[in-house]
Length: 384
Image (cartoon, rainbow, N blue to C red; front, side, top):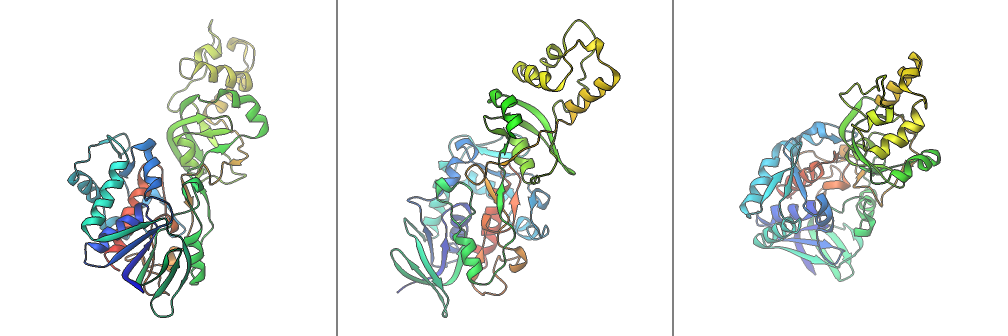
């Protein structure tokens, strides 16, 4: 029977980092990945350049039903710690904006770095293996498509349901339920919003148009770009606010953040004036749907007020989201009240750990979810 100190399920960011951390402590570690290669989600992240952390990461940048949970792990493994590792491998990087760090080259450099660190730590990685059953008669017994394995500690780093085409599955959630752990509500996060049929007819033809906005839902707002697609609204501002928006909520978009923007009476049309701030196609389409057709000089005070309201609080009514196939992350997961915030170990099942996206901790867009992967993996890897 193949036995290891630690078996890690999932060869993504969190799984590999936990493996190299535990292996560096002298533990015998095996990573099981059901895809044909590790790090597929890392590979496509950041447009292929991997937004591998964010210098501003703190607990305020994460959503969880237990907001304090992530504080401990984030405090003990900081963005500067991961950056030091990146630099030790000679990987060139740059700060894009808002603390977001990217590779100058390819996200493949981060995958190669993680695999090299696993090699140095003698942590074995096996791909193309599916888990068929897990039990714990005494030690953990894992039945796989390539034979049985036992281990003292089992780390679940299987991710969420987003990007099914990259092999996402619900395995981690099933393992949690099997061992009696509670889950919070699970739903797509950092996901585009879809138009209502009426809005799709009007704005769908503007697919590809982008402009800076302030997106608001309730008391939360983000200043970023909005992108119009054939099906709805996307871009960083929309992906960010999607984590807070629920069906039936009001979405408010300030289309001229920081500007008055109200067309002034004169020879120029309202659309011509707004075209200096917006792409012309958007100004024409939005203006036709939201402004009086007559010259600005003929607008009544009530009409001017309504246009100002529409510009600074445009409220399309999304029909929903594009779901897991287009979601960058999965909101919710293993209830953090079931886990130790210091070690990520299940309180009721000694030796069982959950890290990364499978846990009910979800970061904002911009490298925060990678930092949670590294920090939670480090917490488990130094404990197992």
